[in-house]
Image (cartoon, rainbow, N blue to C red):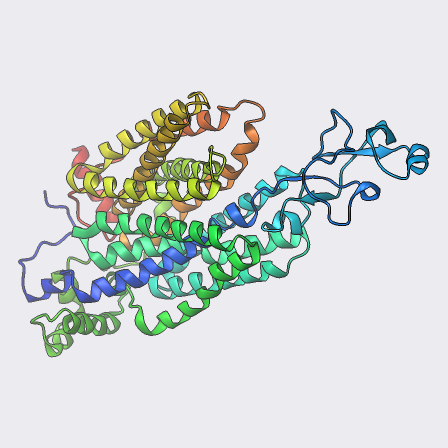
Length: 528
């Protein structure tokens, strides 16, 4: 089928520029490295702000070095975490020490605690018996992603893929300032700021990888985004296991980000973006480098002599006569339908993924090992996604993945806690299915939107997705009402996503559209 606006040309020497070679391989490595580093910052709160065992401090009764174990003098049937027993001053002075009998029946709210260790910021900020504050740290970080995705989407289309990538990853170094925060709300502010500055990296890297690799490597590009995230999480889990102390972990995760400023010299811009933006000279310089590194038969003179229009023609790039704006997006029914469906599926995928990641540390056994196993399961999900999306149609694979994730998650929730192996197996299967959804929706969404507005549209979808990550860290609090409550929410969102995908087209064998008009023309052709 020929789509109006997409010009088909015979293969010639210039088509060699689309071949994957040394140049693309190096660029992929650079991009994936940035994703790995930022992925660690985006899950930092799981161990930096992890729950620490604690009990209420009773100053007059404590030893010089109080420990978290319940002391012999603690009154019976009194919550040691949140309640402070009140001393009977007369009995205390008579015995000159504390015992179960030296306390009244009155209880005060506890405001000072003894902590098991200082490995987490929880002890430094004195957040004992305040689980909502601990959960709020992750929620605030993910709230920063909402704004970050919008900003990075705009910058990706306006300034380019390369400068946006460099700005987002290198600015994440501001997270180091958290080490000096002694106030909870100041810590939250820094957490939000570093998320706003760095989290938009996912939008620009997904777009850049797919545009760099060309149509034949869309699936590989999407899988690499996911794999880079999960490898980063594995490294983070190992660092957390070895370093333990939260300040050491922050230094290890955030300080390397400043080095990415040097990407100015080694990372290259998307030539597809340059061509549709009329930056023909810059694109030709990149093409010359590609021809040299990939040892193509193209000469620098051939690249210099070809006109911009002919070059776009040969590479199937459509340069819009007028720049398309957000107003054009709002006028397009085809784009709005895709945007609505993709936004919810992004929300569902992120809601389930972060929810399962956060809850992985509550599984039976060592929390560090559980986190690492969960990350490894994510990589297995990546490999399954690579096979499925390369072999089968995108939409049907996605729909099955959402249904399977719902089945595994709800089954895990209702499996008895004493059958540990089955509970862990169902959890990992659910995590793998969710990962396939995450990878698939990235690929499917990028293929569904045009180059000219791809950055902002992906940014909007990611923003919707990050609203899911904002809510996910709060889900452990819901278990106090109903243990299966979080799983029920995950399951419902997955089923809705599977149904909504019925309203969007299959994209596997379609070209990479460059304009909104091309997409509207295609949809009209399919309907007729």
